Amino acid sequence: MICTNKDSTAQESDRELVARLVDRARAEGVELVGENGLLGRLAELVLESALEGEITDHLGYDKQQRSGDEATNSRNGAPSKTVITDLGPVEISVPRDREGRFSRRSCGRVAEPAARPRLPGDLHRCHPCEVAGSVADCVI
Image 1 (cartoon, rainbow, N blue to C red):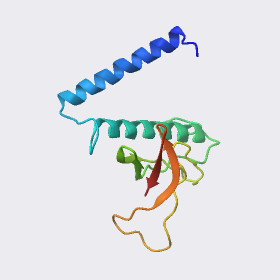
Image 2 (cartoon, rainbow, N blue to C red; image 1 turned 90 degrees about the horizontal axis):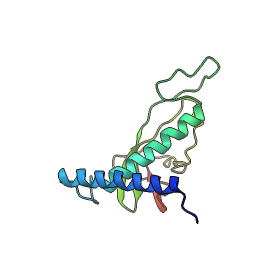
Image 3 (tube, rainbow, N blue to C red; image 1 turned 90 degrees about the vertical axis):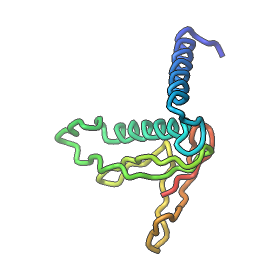
Image 4 (cartoon, rainbow, N blue to C red; image 1 turned 180 degrees about the horizontal axis):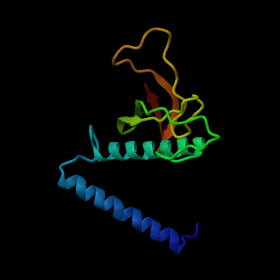
């Protein structure tokens, strides 16, 4: 693979961003891994950003923008879900649309629980989804 100057600049920019994040985490006493760790928070931000981009593509307009006269479908909240990753559980906000047609690509389709009522603490696994090169299970 030939590395272009543009690729090199992007990689350097990424390294600088990561260095600033790590420095900030150290200054605030945040661990790299573990509960409320830096890597878990980054996974949360990356997944939520990807999902927000997907629903924007699906609906055809940005969040807080008017949908236009012809569009009837719109955003309908973003309930909290937990994704189990190699880094541990990560709680993310998963956007949905009013017509229920939004299909997530970043994190597979969430399986509905069995017919019995959901109880607090119940974990219902869904189809595996890929998160940063590793397999994770979505949990509702």
